[in-house]
Length: 238
Image (tube, rainbow, N blue to C red; front, side, top):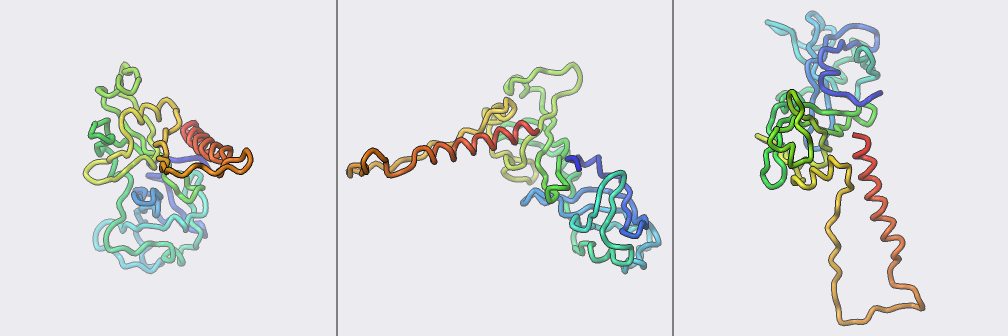
């Protein structure tokens, strides 16, 4: 199963395990703390309220949130694991609606240091990887293109991918935990530089057994090298 965007789901037909059509996907729930998709927002087909144990609505159709753990497969449609009469088992009962990814689209994005870089355009998530939201797509302001080493397109502007692990918080705007220089390094596929470790200086001489230091230099180097390589792989997959 490939990584997907919001529009890949919205409008998709949803069927139960016994091949009954429940309705269509209206939105993708989003957990901005864990960066996962906890549920799909589904517009329920009228007349199916009673068969799945829900109250009828007087006007219009009912909207439900289906736990993504209840999704069996995704192809041309979303197939749930339970049969129609057992669908209530995967419906999330909440007093308030779960925020959807679409509600964050067009929100301002600000780099660390307060530089406004653009607006949220989309999210990319991986259903086969526990519905993890891996990236946020940002439509850049033309004014920041030069600072990021990007060329101005003839029409519109550029859209970039930012790892969700580089998002600090989401409120009236999306604040990143990286500044403009780190963002440029990210776009250039450079590994993240880590702050140097502070070594405590003492008056005591370093103890050396034969020719071996009291710490394994090679192991320390290998750990930092692996962290750098893991960062490179993430960026190459964007």
